[in-house]
Length: 70
Image (cartoon, rainbow, N blue to C red; front, top):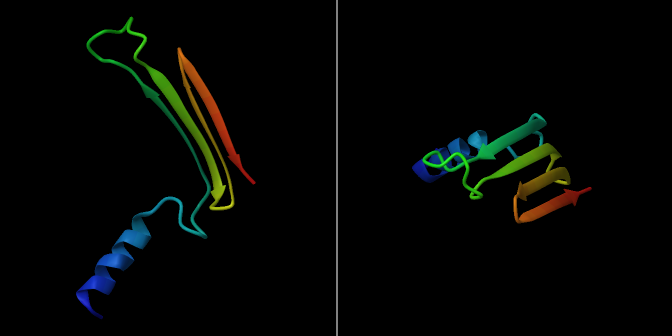
């Protein structure tokens, strides 16, 4: 197998969102570690079932967005 194919296979195996991958829920809190009271913070939450069915919510003090793919 050519090296390029081996590398592509490794990339494909490491993707969380490939077709047939296990569904997941991710929640990340983003904060400014040097100033806990800063408004420079936010949260990202994603529910992923398949490339055709997922939801992502981004929220911060000045912005909020939910994207739904179904």
